[in-house]
Length: 69
Image 1 (tube, rainbow, N blue to C red):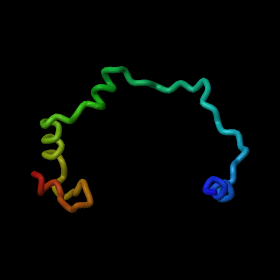
Image 2: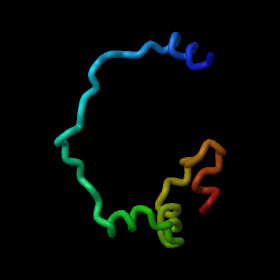
Image 3: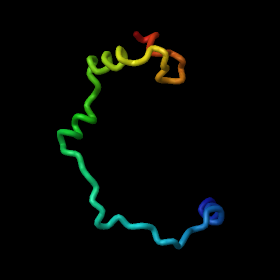
C-alpha cells in the first residue's frame, strides 16, 4: 500500500537522463588521499586558533575564538 501511494504521489518521468560516458574525472594519488584523510595535528589546530579572528564564533554555540585563545 505504501509503494502504491508513493507511486501516485511521485509520478515517474520518462525523460532521458544525461550520461557521463567518456567524461574524465581527475583522481587523487594515494598519497594525496592519505593527506586529506589524516587526523589534524595539535600544531595545526593551535595555528588555526591563534591566527583566527577572536570575534568570530565557529559554531552556533556562541563561543568565539577569543574564548578558546
